Length: 535
Image (cartoon, rainbow, N blue to C red):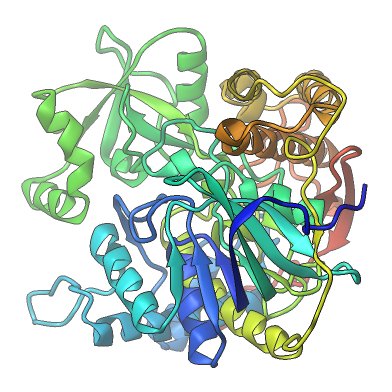
């Protein structure tokens, strides 16, 4: 149903060349880059820009590799096979170049990189709080207007179908804002289904839903089964540290096959059986010091519990991080990070990372590199597009649908919907250990939830955000499972019990989209099938 934005009860109306949605690494890089090109930029963050999202409360590695051909080739090949050879070498080289440039820029801006014994800076990791504090400072210095605590509820379009802005909620005042913009960058992060992983409470797939309502396509949504290791009842997910772990049952006996890498299935099966999994880290004294220095927040809950992880066994669990550490997201059409919707760009975890990671997790260093690279490209692309839109006197139409439009049914029970989606998605046997029969059964339930929500009446202002979050998670789960059914093989993180082997005939991308009717279709990959990559 076509509806203009004229009748929205909006308290604040603004205009910009570029609207950036999301204030994490990708969004801030997009805003800075767009502003540097002369664009008038507004950045809207669901929380407080500089503190919300997965990066701000922790540290992260960065895929920072000096421009040495041998080092670059080694870096590219390190995940080439693990990613099922779905990555694109052209994009991998672009990201390595852009990341090298951006990290060096961070050093010029004053990021406090640690120093090696010889006095050189160690630029392969970033301290999250320092990094994002600096990025907020640079965004403001660039003249970007920041709307904190202002989640977007829906996008706006013009009569041609191009994106033309957004409408959101000012959470601290309870009213609506509207920005008319020549271009929009979606940098809203991935979707972790409120699994309690640190910093992921705002990552509910909002950008996917809003973009799909305008007809945007997604890619690689089957690569969304990433579970990260965490202390039981904890939220810090630093799986890398568990490379030093030995895993045991409660009685101290080893769990056969359990490991952080290549053995997580054994851990998932043990947890699914209702048995506890315990870890102890076996690291030498020098490594222990380095670990505490690199990721101090990993040790905070352990120290508070009186647990020495190097001498004591402690209970662990796996937390779903889905497309935050997976590689699925909005499909990109060209090097400017344009989506299939005119004027709409995507960056960071909101965009597919198959281009550099293929089917293997984009978590950690690659995600950080992707965020700053794709953010810069999306900001630049959006600024260029917006220049051609200046002076446009467009009628604005609402693109949002379910949950924020009048309907004949009752309002959606936001908490109930979120609970129902999580009941399906979080169990390991549905998302991590996949089987066609379980995927079909899950999809049947999810499709039924969507059909019920479709006729629901508009949510109250107080419940609008939670309702849209629940719907975004529901839509994300349906794209994930439909794509997982379409890939009848095991490749990368996508593991099918009924198709345990890789099938070379399926070395392609799976594109998905749609809301009422979710669809998938294969698309060819750009990379070579057999060659070892060269820088």
